[in-house]
Amino acid sequence: MSGPEDLGGPEETLDPADWEAFRALAHRMVDDTLDHLRTLRDQPAWQPMPPAVREGFREPLPRAGEGEDAAYAQFRHRILPYPNGNLHPRFWGWVQGTGTPLGMMSDMLAAAMNPHLGGLNHAPALVEHQVIRWLAELMGFPVDASGVLVTGGSMANVLGLAVGRHARAGWDVREEGMHGGPPLIVYASTETHGWARKAVELMGMGRRSLRTVPVDALDRMDLDALAAAVREDRAAGHRPVCVIGTAGSVNTGASDDLAALADFCAAEGLWFHVDGAFGAWAYTSDALRPRVAGMERADSLAFDLHKWGYLPFECACVLVRDAELHRGAFAASAPYLAQMERGVIAGGLPFADRGIDLTRGFKALKVWMSFKAHGVDAIIRLVEQNVAQARHLAARVEASPTLELLMPVQLNVVCFRYAPADLPEAERDATNQEILLRLQEDGIAVPSGTVVRGRYAIRAAIVNHRSRREDYDVLADAVERIGREVAGTIG
Image (tube, rainbow, N blue to C red; front, side, top):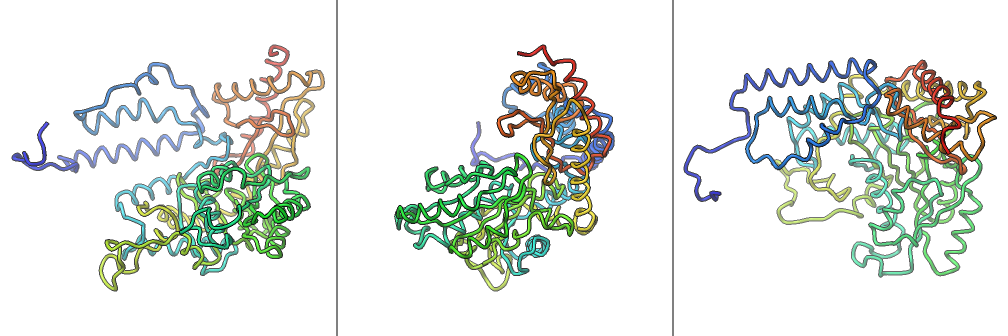
């Protein structure tokens, strides 16, 4: 293999050799993709990948290229037909958003510009500043709150917790790490998403620093138990620093009493962080806002835009009430990144100073274009529509003699099971697991599964702008039908 000193022939590029031929291919890519999106309802919600297609992903490293047309042909044959289904109108698994055609094209435009979003003196940075202001307004935060767009809710939550530790530790954590004082303690309910455990591990605090607080019958953090835990930790010489509230739990859609948690944290001098991965969007609706009231008083808030904001992966936001504390937790400098009064780096790298990433893509463009094109009110109506659809499914479940609602529907998550009176309790978990798998493998719908109060549940987490009421009737009917087929055959 020749080295760089041997370049004697023509220099190369990765731009197309024939721009008009590539233009035709690019138009075909767009047309094929729009056809795919337009016909989603006619496609299976999910389909298993044939072994021969799966085996194709074991091919060796391609040293020589096959050309754009060949690569695209393989994409259409081997990749496009086998997604996890989250674009489909009957996908309600986990909490995965559906994306939009405009969001897709926005990502194409962002990739075409390919800007570096550490900051810098260019229009994309102004777009992100504007989007952060818009999001702060939507979530009830001060318009001068700090914020940054990141990959997803987990990273947004980690950044919020890191700012809280920086603000409440009582020593310079950035300089001394965890050696500057007593053990720091974070409080979260048993329903808090698994990001919290990963965060304290990643931040060097260890799992012992995370206190899991029990919940009540509606999966809300037990405030008396929280207060007792804080008292006990202080008596033991530990330093409580942060309480994590949840707006829309991933398991059942429950929200903590965020107003009470805000009062508690203010009285105790604790950082109040809210994980609003999807539930924070309820705040944007006048009708739904009471369910997450108090969220706007958080010191930091994390939420996704690729869930209930309906945008393509990946895009999430962390907002921090105190901009100086946010910057103080992460800002760093280097001679090659020094800000100047003029030129490309005028304005500095403010987004790099709000997290751990220096290099960042142009996530803000799809938010900006979605808000500008559709209007925020349309997105809010869809959030409300999803909640109404959850209630519709719950009513359908409660009207059935063979289905059982396992948890009151508080927002947009419905947990239920097939449980006719003549099916022994000992067989119900396995029966419902089999129902779930057949729903997915037959391409009918994609809910997910969970465990609620020790019972296996079929779980519909509804953040899908393509779903219609009849889709939920199809789901309920299919669960009843498959349940009759498999009941008594599993054990």
